[in-house]
Length: 218
Image 1 (cartoon, rainbow, N blue to C red):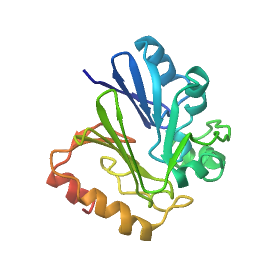
Image 2: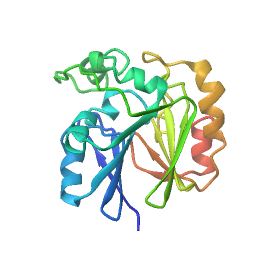
Image 3: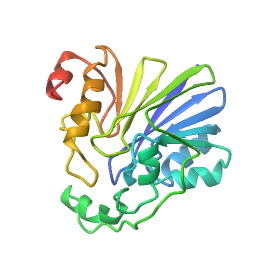
Image 4: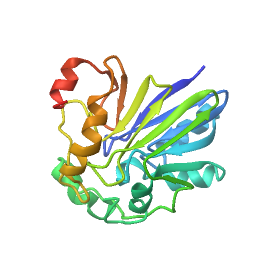
């Protein structure tokens, strides 16, 4: 039976999701080098897949730590995200101290970094069956060029920095584009069925209702 856990980084308040089945694991948005790794060690899962919703550092700062621990794990992200994780500007690590100060956390030290290229970089869509579960990824630029939503068994969507509870989509950060959002991401999000389980990149997971659709302008 699938087990799903959420690990939230105290500093950036971003979510990492850990999926486990039969002693094997898949990780969505490894947001910290220490927390998710320690929890995975406690669980005893062998990580096989690491999926990214987008290239921002607060969603993949722990990527290389997981790669070192599980060198056979396959990293999956959109082609634009793949470029972004290799750039300190595009992954926002170069300006993260300023951003955290703006978010009410001044004086934090955050070292810029880059990651190695992903093993799998898709242009529009990717899909696989992992341990009996269907994982999908759909490229949805807007928040960033490399943004995507990740689906699980047609019942749950990991939305990254889309559909965050109580927040509008941020389009003003480096690479953000309102035109891309309206052309691709917004129609996809508006088409998600009511009752879908939403696992956002920040905030608690929830079930999609008409109220949430309205609050996000969908």
